[in-house]
Length: 137
Figure 1 (tube, rainbow, N blue to C red):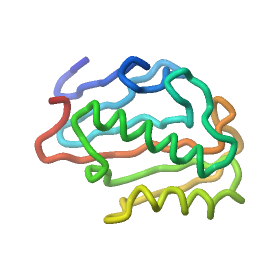
Figure 2: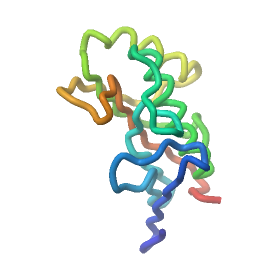
Figure 3: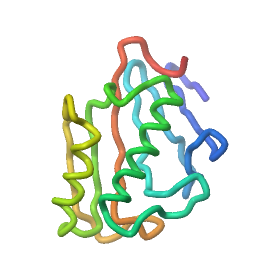
């Protein structure tokens, strides 16, 4: 869906993206910027993957990357990340898992502790990407 230079992207499990848990676009492009909706640690069946924050972080980042790829991007396009942790005691384990995904250049990041996340998740992450040539090729 496109409205005035803004384009929404919605995907299905057939695309390799877990089913949505609420009504939202998986990503929205505005010019050269792509906002990827917060992802949960679920697989394409909607099942939560892993019982620890490191495993869940890897699944969330796989989901974010898949959405980004479907929009025409790659990991190198990520410029900002917001992470939400259910348990602040998981911060170090989260950082270890997260850092493996960005060995060359770390994007800006905010990490917040919260009192609850959808589907019983330990972590939720969203990110913002930028490409000079835009999105949705």
